[in-house]
Figure 1 (cartoon, rainbow, N blue to C red):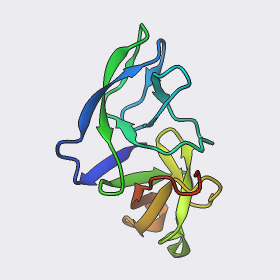
Figure 2: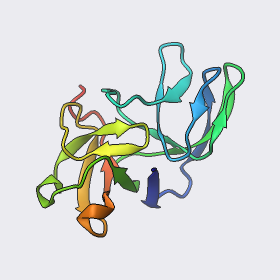
Figure 3: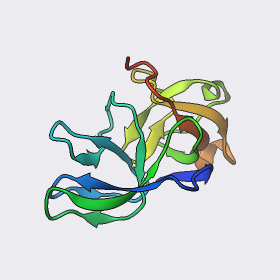
Length: 137
């Protein structure tokens, strides 16, 4: 399960300081914590997503650097979903289901815009992008 960049990812790699003891999941959404470090996003996050982890690792100290991809309205991602997407989900804003999956049926936090379904509905994949400030302003 992952959030995988499809285009416009060139020049968007950045090393970010993570919180100690954080289990980083490649392809997972990343958010800042209250202490100024980064952590993996929770399923019910209402925080805008600006980064996706590019490696699997576990940090051992505050400030350990982890390679991440800066995502914004221009980086298109192919994402796994936690349920079969419907054609009516296309063109809607939805939420994270887990750190690395999209919930095509939830629109509380409105973090991700679904452009299209990828493959068969049963493949549980969509293409789209994280939006800045949608529903969270």
